Length: 532
Image 1 (cartoon, rainbow, N blue to C red):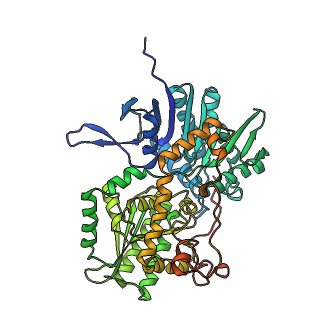
Image 2: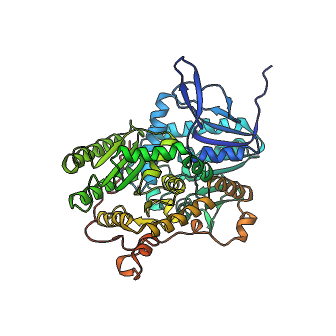
Image 3: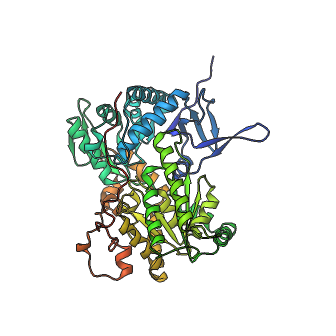
């Protein structure tokens, strides 16, 4: 007679487990904690209640047996080689990802990809149902698992179900392109509460339910037809582990490493830094174009100014990502060949991952942090940079198309599509007096410190427990900036006569948004994919 498996009061379901498999030199298999805000947030929650995490272990084929690691029960879900290709690389990242990111590259629609997505979501839901205790809280993560909430509700109507979207949720005009739009919405409506990074994303979801399903909606609630049940959708933006990352950045060895980095680069007067997954949504090409033009115009140049671009490998079997990698490498080669100097390249391009200690040192070494996505749900790099700048140094150039900008709008705001405006913003970040930049950084750090990842998790779980009503604490509070939609940057004619530091940091004024030289400089247009 087999022993029944233990069940848990809190179950997290995500595409990946929070650990990475490492094979040691002697052939032993070890599991090491993955970096990332979600893992940190869940650790703080699971200290007070037993929890399980359902996810893929990272290798094709049979899944390992469930095991415990750092106090969390890990329940691996298997994926075959075909499912990795069709569910993950195909439907998740070549169908959903483009649609949810403004169709910067065309989306591709294949029915076999959709079938694989359905099968994998069913498998995840069954694993969740197996490990969830009676009346458990189930928290599903992200766009890869949008069908899981409804399946879990069918299998386990006793549990409380939440879902959080780490990426943008598109306007209905883009979402409507999906041939399986109704099934995806129905899958999400299996949840009790749906969390999004921005209020605009929550509104997009509610509007999609109203227009595409004919559902009855009122403010942030959607009534599920025939179920006499309401689902609430609201913005609860994710953050970083401020205390943990700040403590890491303050370590003497990390601060010494920051000094070594600057020295190894020739101690430039201005070190600019970009840190991104190699993804077409991150605006790396636009950033390099602006930088190349500034070099060509001799407004900046090596050895006084240099750029370090870290591009973490990502989805390298997807055609759009392979093409992007080639384009960026060619651009970097051209910039260094034409505008670099012997012993002083204009761009230091690094195409691999780094440990947290090295990233904290890079953040402290950088005078200007360039965060210029064309569309991003949040972009935690912006918050990580701010957190590491305990010295109040540095300047953050931040795209208005990130979720982070709606919280960190004191940063040097930019429209990355406007190349001329982006150039002006970079120059302003370099030239604003140090005292003004310190005041800006202090305000940015206060925001991240007050709204760290632990608070995000606590707010989300409180909202899930109270849904469809507001949590009692939230209902008594005035809306905070991250719950309201910050307007986009004003056109030049709307700018007030402020000091350069005030206008540059606070509202994005003077960034050149809408100016003629760069406003039409876009690398891709939206187009439909091909159906099969």
